[in-house]
Image 1 (cartoon, rainbow, N blue to C red):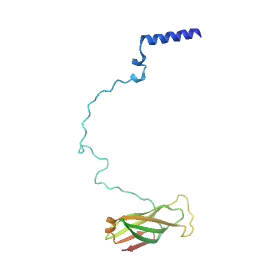
Image 2: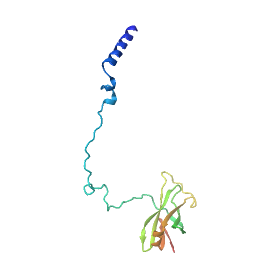
Image 3: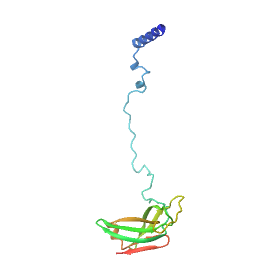
Image 4: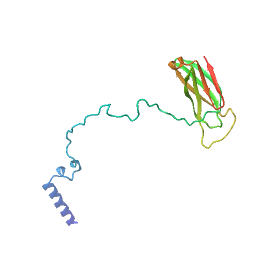
Length: 164
């Protein structure tokens, strides 16, 4: 035990007397040198850089949700900022969710909306028509409302139209 203590003390005295660890390569803070200024590469102009998505490309959204079976009710209610289109539809089975009135476009003053809903996975309970009824809404602002004279909501088997 005495021998290990003597060797340890001798080693400690040697290290403190001969060199400073703070300035040696054993100190991890000294592994990299001090930072220096580096020249900056010239930035490329916008004409040199090609965009990932072209400017004239329109996004294509693929909606895999099926249309509901039928539309049972359709109302358009005016608001201070435009109008709210509300529709009720009957789904093929119970459990349909994520219902949405998806705009298809405005043609000759007719706004066409498709009533789509997400089908449940592995759930086939039929139930009554009341238990399969789902609701969705679409909000129109004043600018869109100015171009619309009637609203048409389409389902798989029927469609409903309301006019001003």
